[in-house]
Image 1 (cartoon, helix red, strand yellow):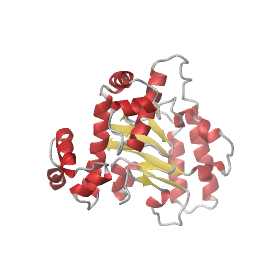
Image 2 (cartoon, rainbow, N blue to C red):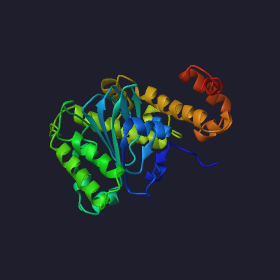
Image 3 (cartoon, rainbow, N blue to C red):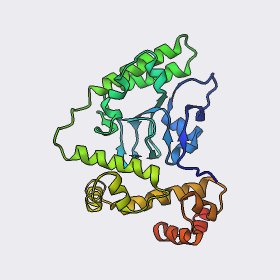
Image 4 (tube, helix red, strand yellow):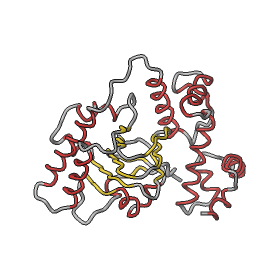
Length: 287
Protein backbone atom coordinates (compact mmCIF):
# COMPACT_ATOMS: atom_id res chain seq x y z
CA UNK A 1 0.00 0.00 0.00
CA UNK A 2 1.37 3.38 -0.98
CA UNK A 3 1.48 5.93 1.86
CA UNK A 4 -1.02 8.73 1.39
CA UNK A 5 1.05 11.40 3.10
CA UNK A 6 0.01 14.97 3.72
CA UNK A 7 -2.27 16.25 0.94
CA UNK A 8 -0.50 18.38 -1.66
CA UNK A 9 -3.20 20.34 -3.46
CA UNK A 10 -3.00 21.42 -7.09
CA UNK A 11 -4.84 24.29 -8.74
CA UNK A 12 -7.13 21.69 -10.28
CA UNK A 13 -8.40 21.02 -6.75
CA UNK A 14 -10.32 24.30 -7.01
CA UNK A 15 -12.57 23.96 -10.08
CA UNK A 16 -14.33 27.04 -11.38
CA UNK A 17 -17.07 27.72 -13.89
CA UNK A 18 -14.71 29.11 -16.51
CA UNK A 19 -11.93 27.07 -18.16
CA UNK A 20 -9.09 26.01 -15.85
CA UNK A 21 -6.47 28.71 -15.35
CA UNK A 22 -3.05 28.80 -13.69
CA UNK A 23 -4.35 31.39 -11.22
CA UNK A 24 -7.27 31.80 -8.83
CA UNK A 25 -8.81 34.43 -6.54
CA UNK A 26 -11.69 34.26 -4.09
CA UNK A 27 -12.97 35.75 -0.87
CA UNK A 28 -11.59 33.73 2.05
CA UNK A 29 -14.99 33.24 3.67
CA UNK A 30 -16.38 31.84 0.40
CA UNK A 31 -13.32 29.74 -0.33
CA UNK A 32 -13.35 27.82 2.98
CA UNK A 33 -17.04 26.95 2.56
CA UNK A 34 -16.76 25.81 -1.04
CA UNK A 35 -13.60 23.81 -0.43
CA UNK A 36 -13.70 22.49 3.17
CA UNK A 37 -10.65 20.27 2.55
CA UNK A 38 -8.47 23.41 2.90
CA UNK A 39 -9.25 23.54 6.62
CA UNK A 40 -6.93 20.64 7.48
CA UNK A 41 -3.13 20.73 7.28
CA UNK A 42 -1.93 20.54 3.69
CA UNK A 43 0.60 21.86 1.18
CA UNK A 44 0.29 23.19 -2.39
CA UNK A 45 2.21 22.87 -5.63
CA UNK A 46 1.57 26.59 -6.35
CA UNK A 47 2.07 29.97 -4.67
CA UNK A 48 -0.56 31.32 -2.26
CA UNK A 49 -1.33 34.81 -0.98
CA UNK A 50 -3.71 35.45 1.90
CA UNK A 51 -4.91 38.93 2.89
CA UNK A 52 -7.00 39.32 6.08
CA UNK A 53 -9.46 42.22 6.14
CA UNK A 54 -11.48 41.42 9.28
CA UNK A 55 -11.64 39.02 12.21
CA UNK A 56 -9.01 37.00 14.01
CA UNK A 57 -7.54 33.51 14.11
CA UNK A 58 -4.24 31.72 13.69
CA UNK A 59 -2.23 30.47 10.73
CA UNK A 60 0.44 27.79 11.24
CA UNK A 61 3.11 27.63 8.53
CA UNK A 62 5.84 24.97 8.83
CA UNK A 63 5.25 24.55 12.60
CA UNK A 64 5.30 28.28 13.40
CA UNK A 65 1.93 29.78 14.41
CA UNK A 66 1.11 33.38 13.48
CA UNK A 67 -1.82 35.59 14.44
CA UNK A 68 -4.45 36.48 11.88
CA UNK A 69 -5.65 40.06 12.13
CA UNK A 70 -6.78 42.80 9.74
CA UNK A 71 -3.91 43.93 7.55
CA UNK A 72 -1.94 40.67 7.77
CA UNK A 73 -0.70 39.33 4.44
CA UNK A 74 0.69 35.80 4.12
CA UNK A 75 2.95 34.51 1.34
CA UNK A 76 3.39 30.75 0.84
CA UNK A 77 5.71 29.05 -1.61
CA UNK A 78 5.05 25.58 -3.07
CA UNK A 79 5.61 22.77 -0.57
CA UNK A 80 5.05 24.75 2.62
CA UNK A 81 2.65 23.03 5.01
CA UNK A 82 0.01 25.24 6.57
CA UNK A 83 -3.26 25.19 8.46
CA UNK A 84 -5.45 28.06 9.55
CA UNK A 85 -7.98 28.36 12.33
CA UNK A 86 -10.41 31.13 11.45
CA UNK A 87 -12.70 33.01 13.78
CA UNK A 88 -16.37 33.27 12.77
CA UNK A 89 -15.92 36.87 11.61
CA UNK A 90 -12.69 36.34 9.66
CA UNK A 91 -12.78 37.83 6.17
CA UNK A 92 -10.19 38.30 3.47
CA UNK A 93 -8.89 37.25 0.07
CA UNK A 94 -6.98 34.23 -1.21
CA UNK A 95 -4.95 34.28 -4.43
CA UNK A 96 -3.21 31.31 -6.06
CA UNK A 97 -0.84 31.26 -9.00
CA UNK A 98 1.67 28.93 -10.59
CA UNK A 99 5.30 29.88 -11.02
CA UNK A 100 5.05 29.41 -14.80
CA UNK A 101 2.13 31.84 -14.98
CA UNK A 102 4.10 34.59 -13.25
CA UNK A 103 7.40 33.88 -15.01
CA UNK A 104 5.76 34.03 -18.45
CA UNK A 105 5.96 37.83 -18.29
CA UNK A 106 8.44 38.34 -15.45
CA UNK A 107 11.25 35.83 -16.10
CA UNK A 108 14.44 35.56 -14.10
CA UNK A 109 14.96 35.17 -10.37
CA UNK A 110 12.58 37.91 -9.25
CA UNK A 111 9.85 35.56 -8.01
CA UNK A 112 12.31 33.51 -5.98
CA UNK A 113 14.08 36.59 -4.62
CA UNK A 114 11.07 38.04 -2.82
CA UNK A 115 12.07 37.91 0.88
CA UNK A 116 8.69 36.61 2.09
CA UNK A 117 9.08 33.47 -0.04
CA UNK A 118 12.45 32.63 1.56
CA UNK A 119 13.27 30.97 4.85
CA UNK A 120 15.14 34.01 6.23
CA UNK A 121 11.96 36.08 6.52
CA UNK A 122 8.63 35.26 8.18
CA UNK A 123 5.91 34.44 5.61
CA UNK A 124 3.71 37.29 6.87
CA UNK A 125 3.54 41.06 6.82
CA UNK A 126 1.50 42.88 9.43
CA UNK A 127 0.29 46.03 7.72
CA UNK A 128 -1.94 48.71 9.29
CA UNK A 129 -5.57 47.59 9.04
CA UNK A 130 -6.37 50.91 7.35
CA UNK A 131 -3.69 50.64 4.66
CA UNK A 132 -4.92 51.51 1.16
CA UNK A 133 -1.97 50.47 -0.97
CA UNK A 134 -2.12 46.67 -1.20
CA UNK A 135 -5.68 45.75 -0.24
CA UNK A 136 -7.13 47.45 -3.37
CA UNK A 137 -4.88 45.24 -5.49
CA UNK A 138 -6.42 42.12 -3.95
CA UNK A 139 -9.85 43.55 -4.69
CA UNK A 140 -8.76 44.12 -8.29
CA UNK A 141 -7.38 40.58 -8.52
CA UNK A 142 -10.72 39.15 -7.37
CA UNK A 143 -12.69 41.39 -9.72
CA UNK A 144 -10.45 40.51 -12.65
CA UNK A 145 -10.73 36.80 -11.94
CA UNK A 146 -14.51 36.70 -11.54
CA UNK A 147 -15.54 39.04 -14.38
CA UNK A 148 -15.46 38.02 -18.08
CA UNK A 149 -12.89 40.61 -19.11
CA UNK A 150 -10.75 40.30 -22.21
CA UNK A 151 -7.02 39.82 -21.67
CA UNK A 152 -7.85 38.64 -18.16
CA UNK A 153 -4.63 36.69 -17.63
CA UNK A 154 -2.41 39.63 -18.59
CA UNK A 155 -4.22 42.09 -16.34
CA UNK A 156 -4.36 39.59 -13.45
CA UNK A 157 -0.60 39.03 -13.79
CA UNK A 158 0.01 42.80 -13.71
CA UNK A 159 -1.99 43.28 -10.52
CA UNK A 160 -0.18 40.28 -9.01
CA UNK A 161 3.21 41.75 -9.86
CA UNK A 162 2.26 45.06 -8.28
CA UNK A 163 1.02 43.32 -5.12
CA UNK A 164 4.30 41.43 -4.75
CA UNK A 165 6.49 44.42 -5.52
CA UNK A 166 4.70 46.74 -3.11
CA UNK A 167 4.63 44.08 -0.41
CA UNK A 168 8.38 43.61 -0.74
CA UNK A 169 8.89 47.27 0.16
CA UNK A 170 7.47 46.52 3.60
CA UNK A 171 9.99 43.75 4.33
CA UNK A 172 12.80 44.96 6.57
CA UNK A 173 16.28 43.73 5.84
CA UNK A 174 16.98 40.96 8.39
CA UNK A 175 19.73 41.87 10.89
CA UNK A 176 22.90 40.05 9.98
CA UNK A 177 23.56 38.73 13.46
CA UNK A 178 20.04 38.56 14.89
CA UNK A 179 19.41 35.36 16.81
CA UNK A 180 15.79 35.10 15.67
CA UNK A 181 16.80 34.93 12.00
CA UNK A 182 18.82 31.70 12.06
CA UNK A 183 16.64 30.30 14.84
CA UNK A 184 13.48 30.66 12.76
CA UNK A 185 15.29 29.31 9.72
CA UNK A 186 16.37 26.20 11.63
CA UNK A 187 12.84 25.73 12.99
CA UNK A 188 11.45 25.87 9.45
CA UNK A 189 14.09 23.42 8.27
CA UNK A 190 13.10 21.13 11.13
CA UNK A 191 9.46 21.47 10.09
CA UNK A 192 10.27 20.62 6.48
CA UNK A 193 12.30 17.57 7.55
CA UNK A 194 9.55 16.50 9.91
CA UNK A 195 6.97 16.62 7.13
CA UNK A 196 9.27 14.51 4.98
CA UNK A 197 10.38 11.90 7.50
CA UNK A 198 7.75 11.63 10.26
CA UNK A 199 6.82 8.09 9.14
CA UNK A 200 10.32 6.75 9.62
CA UNK A 201 12.13 9.04 12.09
CA UNK A 202 10.72 9.69 15.53
CA UNK A 203 13.71 10.60 17.67
CA UNK A 204 15.11 14.06 18.28
CA UNK A 205 18.58 12.71 17.51
CA UNK A 206 17.49 11.71 13.99
CA UNK A 207 16.44 15.26 13.12
CA UNK A 208 19.31 16.89 14.95
CA UNK A 209 21.74 14.90 12.80
CA UNK A 210 19.95 15.97 9.61
CA UNK A 211 20.23 19.59 10.77
CA UNK A 212 23.88 19.17 11.87
CA UNK A 213 22.91 20.07 15.44
CA UNK A 214 23.08 18.27 18.74
CA UNK A 215 19.83 16.90 20.16
CA UNK A 216 20.18 19.25 23.14
CA UNK A 217 20.61 22.25 20.84
CA UNK A 218 17.53 21.32 18.80
CA UNK A 219 15.46 20.89 21.95
CA UNK A 220 16.64 24.23 23.32
CA UNK A 221 15.87 25.90 20.01
CA UNK A 222 12.32 24.53 19.95
CA UNK A 223 11.73 25.54 23.56
CA UNK A 224 12.96 29.08 22.90
CA UNK A 225 11.03 29.69 19.67
CA UNK A 226 7.93 27.52 20.09
CA UNK A 227 7.86 26.80 23.84
CA UNK A 228 7.71 23.07 23.06
CA UNK A 229 10.28 20.29 23.00
CA UNK A 230 11.39 18.82 19.70
CA UNK A 231 10.01 15.42 20.74
CA UNK A 232 6.60 17.00 21.44
CA UNK A 233 6.60 18.46 17.91
CA UNK A 234 7.49 15.07 16.45
CA UNK A 235 4.65 13.37 18.30
CA UNK A 236 2.22 16.17 17.36
CA UNK A 237 3.08 15.73 13.68
CA UNK A 238 2.44 11.97 13.81
CA UNK A 239 -0.81 12.40 15.74
CA UNK A 240 -2.01 15.15 13.38
CA UNK A 241 -1.54 12.85 10.40
CA UNK A 242 -3.18 9.96 12.24
CA UNK A 243 -6.18 12.15 13.05
CA UNK A 244 -6.39 13.30 9.45
CA UNK A 245 -6.44 9.72 8.19
CA UNK A 246 -8.96 8.63 10.82
CA UNK A 247 -11.21 11.57 9.96
CA UNK A 248 -10.92 11.71 6.18
CA UNK A 249 -10.20 8.18 4.98
CA UNK A 250 -11.91 4.83 5.20
CA UNK A 251 -8.76 3.11 6.41
CA UNK A 252 -8.98 0.80 9.40
CA UNK A 253 -6.84 1.43 12.46
CA UNK A 254 -4.30 -1.20 11.38
CA UNK A 255 -4.08 0.41 7.92
CA UNK A 256 -3.59 3.85 9.46
CA UNK A 257 -0.81 2.38 11.60
CA UNK A 258 0.84 0.99 8.46
CA UNK A 259 0.52 4.34 6.64
CA UNK A 260 2.36 6.01 9.50
CA UNK A 261 5.19 3.50 9.63
CA UNK A 262 4.07 1.49 12.68
CA UNK A 263 4.74 -2.22 12.20
CA UNK A 264 2.62 -3.15 15.22
CA UNK A 265 -0.97 -1.86 15.22
CA UNK A 266 -1.32 -2.44 18.97
CA UNK A 267 1.74 -0.24 19.60
CA UNK A 268 0.17 2.45 17.40
CA UNK A 269 -3.00 2.31 19.50
CA UNK A 270 -0.94 2.79 22.69
CA UNK A 271 1.06 5.59 21.07
CA UNK A 272 -2.09 7.36 19.90
CA UNK A 273 -3.73 7.01 23.30
CA UNK A 274 -0.66 8.38 25.07
CA UNK A 275 -0.33 11.51 22.91
CA UNK A 276 -3.95 12.12 21.85
CA UNK A 277 -5.63 11.14 25.12
CA UNK A 278 -8.02 8.67 23.51
CA UNK A 279 -7.97 5.57 21.31
CA UNK A 280 -8.08 5.82 17.52
CA UNK A 281 -11.53 4.23 17.40
CA UNK A 282 -12.89 6.58 20.05
CA UNK A 283 -11.44 9.55 18.19
CA UNK A 284 -13.10 8.43 14.94
CA UNK A 285 -16.47 7.99 16.64
CA UNK A 286 -16.26 11.53 18.03
CA UNK A 287 -15.87 13.07 14.58
